Figure 1: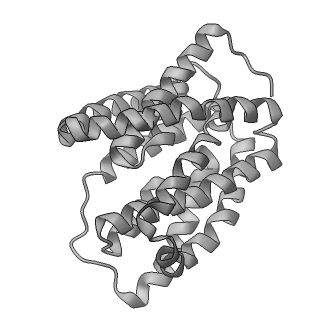
Figure 2 (figure 1 turned 60 degrees about the horizontal axis):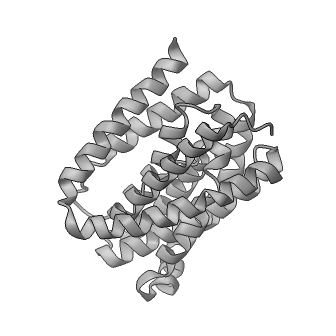
Length: 250
């Protein structure tokens, strides 16, 4: 893939991924959401989703292992985890064939959906008999969205909330889902030509700003009032999503 990047664009990418890592450091998720939303302002859609493929893999590794819950989460969530990779590959195949304007519109709608879903809280947990089919549906929906845009959070987050997991298990489980999804996205994008050696190396290099941002985000999370910070991020992402939808329509 030809990389239309000058020094200013590279510097902008570094700042974008620094901010994306900071958001993830504070809230535990949001890396692709911020990375895709901001980099889409000055890069082509296919390059945007390719560059956002590698950083989530490394950043989610520690999250999946946090708290020593990896084994328990694997036993609990295996139906969704099994479905996630093939659904991601299917979504990646669609991404390779999409018109760029349509992809911008899809990304904008996904971002707005994430912001809307962020205010929801389920009133009750999912009955045990529905845990397996619910996991399959969450893995399918999350995989398709992840392959299409690298943003796969909404169905996965809602599924984990519906299971009624306590916070430590929730964070670890979310990291496990995103880790499996990130690996699937890298393989899928390589297979359909969205991620080649050149874009892969640049995507890997952008992991540096992400990790720095995560450290900063963890410190900010201890010092800032989370609701105020989250409100500012939601406002910014809402404006970015509307701008992407505008680009798709006009």
